[in-house]
Image (cartoon, rainbow, N blue to C red; front, side, top):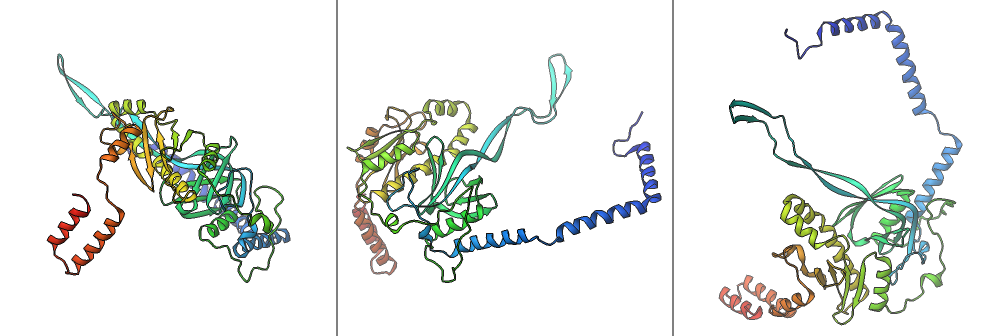
Length: 417
């Protein structure tokens, strides 16, 4: 018996005819119902605002306008919740804020498509279909941290209940999108961040934008005063001149290290002899990486992709140290082990001396600080001013003042080739 696979069948046609007949007989009632529904929608949409709604809307506009035009330094206060840097002040705070970031997960699919097996003869089968294992990657925002959002003139900070801190330096923020209850932060490097929760996204966005653009001066048209906030996220609206202008004591490496150690959940130490801030990574285990490398190439590739965020974090910490201890030559070392023996990365003066995933022998072999020091000592030293002289020579070559042969000879001399 043949069955139609693409039609609705006789019973389907019969049911459709009954419905159409009913609608045609009682169409007037359907029309009246539709008119009533449309009328209700129009009334709700066009209903005039109440006096309370108008007042709340006006107060909100006044508050946002004040934030856009006020002298931003009047919002600055010091805080004891988190250790601020030299000349760093708090400008905005909101409690119960969720920090989410995009995360990519790889799911193994061991069956893809229909398969069949046809016996041709004893011991011989013809197989059709695909059973090749595949992987599917899904990227979605996941909750990473929850805590108190603090905006300063140097950082966006999320202070968690255990005292640990997640932060974004203002210089790495490329753009931001405010929402009623949150902010989306687009960064120049690293993963973007979504902030949600008990957060006035519009007010926080105004303050953060002015901090990023160094827009602290008051606008001449700013005459309104901000609405008082009695609960939820608060904008600090006053600070004495004495507090705002109190000079900081000179920052030493030990004081900076103590501050970073209190804010970090990692084991760390200050290596004064070699002038390094050293951290031991908890979640990056060399033995696990070696096992993944030997057994699952796709998972290892995912690891190399996800580890870029850690790489960027190390660079940002090194930049912070250079900023707070200018000219003192301190760097950052990250280690795989709590004994501070096996290097993951070493950064000094804004660039990597060593980054394990870039090592051709990684992950089967890793370097100790002594190994790296020996390797760096063996490399030819080139003075910085030699590069400047080389650039001048290139200009002379482009102008036709010296020949290519003369340029190449001088280049070899300057670079010790």
